[in-house]
Length: 405
Image (cartoon, helix red, strand yellow):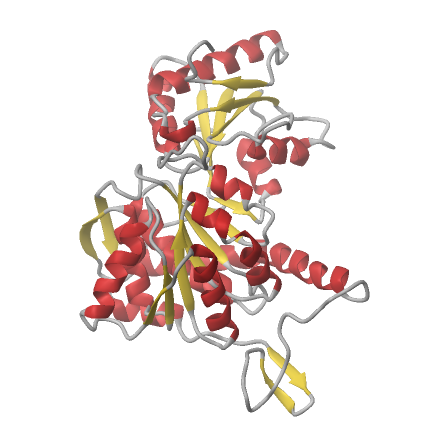
């Protein structure tokens, strides 16, 4: 484990500092609250000569992702950041980035989508992009943001993965809140990340790297109709499946370097839990706090933190949940017209064919930045205790914290 420096950084600064240490070739920047600090801070690194990155101030988020696609296709390491409506404006190009198997890294400061206009946190932007073919990591605190912002390059560029990675941090709650962050020396980060590897392909002029190169012409992103489109989509499916095998190896290597252990799913007090909540992002810290209090009161409560949302680690979740009788799925997102929130639907699907499974209850909280308080979490646990006692779920979906609910 290397010696580290303790810094006071907010989540956005943690992204920028980690990216500075990686020193990507291209950063495509367009400001949008609450990620603006990321590209502002990085522009300062560029202006001060601390990196040799080509900093491209584009005219929109659509252009930011387009610029990243072009740079990455040419063989560069490309980074960008966005939030909310900015991610929505990128929509078309998000699919292109993953379909072309480009290892772009993007920080997403999760923010509600309009309307009405709201600049605060929920997960509607990231959840909306869940089927774009990007790997998604959700962070609990600024330390995780820093660590994931370095690990993401190794994940994206792994030759068995070759997919873009989205680092998700809750807007304002993480993006603008200063925390203690242990940072590695620049050289240690440089050695961990290494040089970008390339898949070897064979063209009409011989073998070469899968990137745009005048000396070995190839076509990227051509018209792909009925003959091969389906097969190319299956390549992405296989890459996502492979990612579940290889991200763990990168997490283990990071633990050896930094001393910080990460997993796709992180259980807390689940060994004998009778009721538990599963969630993502900054609110899991509050859930953990409530679990501690409930344990002191004699309630066998537990928590499961989901860090990796795409690819969805179904078997890891079920292992972490174990034999708990009642499980609540707590999420900062609504899927309009659907029977449940996005995370709840994923978990219900994972358990569908299992004979033994917990009672599942869905709790939507914190939309538009509404604080997820300990009282709200206790309300969810009260509902789970009732379900466990009666053996049935009376109300699949509950909206906690809404006036009139």
